[in-house]
Image (cartoon, rainbow, N blue to C red):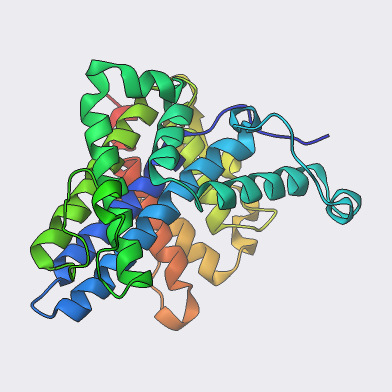
Length: 311
């Protein structure tokens, strides 16, 4: 029987969107006077946009496959015989997303709004209060037509281009001027859609926000895999207030590795700055773990917990 979590964490979904927003802003900052380079950056932006949508949808559907559009699916016998429940569901979802992203962009965007809002997309389209959402979706759909023209038609508008495009209009058989100013508009449209998506996620009670202690446990488990480094054995926790209130010093702490001692000292120093950080050489630690610790602790404002706990 597949063991699935009951809820998708809004923190996880928002983090996916946040990272993509940073990528989009980075791409925007690199746009310059060279149209060829700019068009390459534009294609990169479209790739990040699509990948973000797929990632968010996958995170939701793997935990709640009931949100899949179809009621029946065909499963390859070989997959059925050689896979566990999780792998089967994952394959079904990947196949459905693959087919979805081959199709109409408006359908894709309405579907993702539907699964993060619990509102049928027919209702999204037909309600006046959703006019802004529909405008952004239409713009993003237009952008995909520009992308396809650039990739498949050497940047020339096709015969059906005027029929397909609603907002960013162009005449037939003209070279599309995909220049810096237009690309900035396109990226801003993507960012607008991400804002709508994030807002809908945060409003949906199905996407439970992780408590800070839960986030810290997750981070701890990413940093430490030793059986003598259990989160609850190194911290005094107040679950009701969602706080770490003090440090524990287990007797067996002296047995952990030198790099683990460094990571542990960083955690403790960030909690209470009177506890020193161990000195270390870069060659003796994993820089990725160091970065992950600082980034993860900053997200939950870990450095304020000691003050909050002792008010």
